[in-house]
Length: 206
Image (tube, rainbow, N blue to C red; front, side):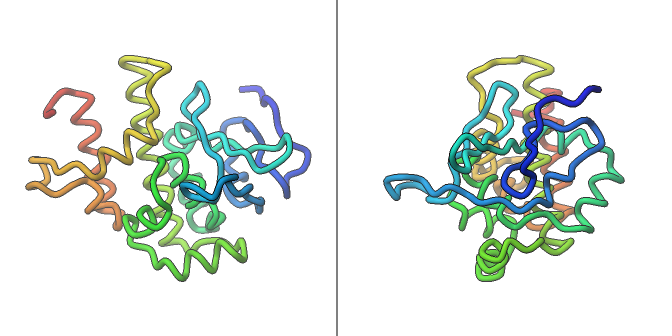
């Protein structure tokens, strides 16, 4: 697959797209442009592009794209390599903004320590393997939903990140009344949630 547009200033912005087999952008440092008006998250301006990826404005004409479907479809060994190396802590804020979820709520849902994440975001240091695994898990879940919708009933009006944020709060009979978000703080729980999404696609339960 040929490469498309990339940035030459890797320390300032992620590449817009990279060829398959390259998740290097998960580790790059970047500055986040604060929202004007001081409302909502105050961290990054994230919207969904036509592919469902999170487009983040970081100032000027620069932006980054967090391609959730790319993360979901990445080779498992590549995912393990990314997790072991550790992703940039600020990706949590970007993901939370794309989900239209307060960053503190996402941090709590993933069972992470607020003070630790706040410090690592400020210093732009990498998350630990365990922290990176949980962040990758929610990112892959968004990519899984995005893939499911695009393969079964593609629509331009569906935002997978926002849908996941809302669905994680919904009590489900399949989980004995617990919401999926209750399971997102462990790898085992995230695997159960992913399986529930597959059941949704097959129509096994509503």
